[in-house]
Image (cartoon, rainbow, N blue to C red; front, top):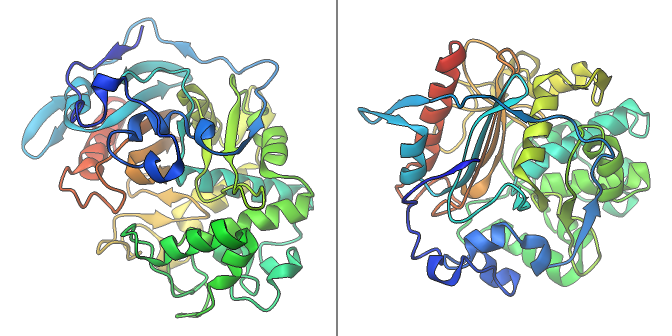
Length: 400
């Protein structure tokens, strides 16, 4: 049985006495007393569509004995159990060579609960784009979004090449700082009032030439979702369910949240799945697109998404500017980590992460309800300590 950490941070504030209740509406879902319950029940709070599991789920066994992981952080030596007491992680699952070697849960969360992806969903949309490219439904990543979505003709995003949307390099002036008064808040208000297409058209000022600079902005993924729907003639649940979710051998149903105004999936981050299936997704990525001897996504396309050497210089770790630092690089809707070999991650606000190290055949799923969404402005150091934990896990098997 997975172990449950003893004293998780902020249990009382997060709703322990009430059993970690889910919110009754989306406006309430991110509030502290409801965020734990809501992040495991978003598809019961708002409209959603479903992706069916595979008829024969891919094996995901538990190792006979658990591996003990140690890491260094701020002058101290710690374990995974310590980490669960330091940070507001809801679930951590470590998979090595296809076997679960450690897992932990906080706040009464269980492996059968569907947990919100936040922006990890962006990478899933990108996998769909690459699959549509393989199938010829998308002709080229150099095509412009309006080539597939004529309603975007004449708009900034409509005139942007698909590859630059995937690279977060549209050049649009857009601030996404989760302040509640940023461009993201305005975009979401427009989407809820007038629909997804109207919101996509509302971003209208280009600050830089496309392809030149990284600027993280969720609407670029919204437009990719619209392109994928138009190119395939299917919604994300239908297309991604058949082309990605079933082929990875998912064991459980997954969902995409919908915009109630137009029924379009919230491609920026409205995906929900159980942690074991997030692990299976990571395992497919670690195996360069292979699951049980079958190809889900071509290896070359995954390298295009995740290999630093295939990105322009300005998007590589050590050179890309993001939040005042140059730690991360960015591929195609995927974060690239520094180190001795290819290593990458799906990331979402509030601490969501799927860490993938193909050389070590290592995957870590990390779900959380961090104190804030704006890069750990709270001072809890979730991102920094999580990185230290990943480095400790890697050090058990190899070198960073």
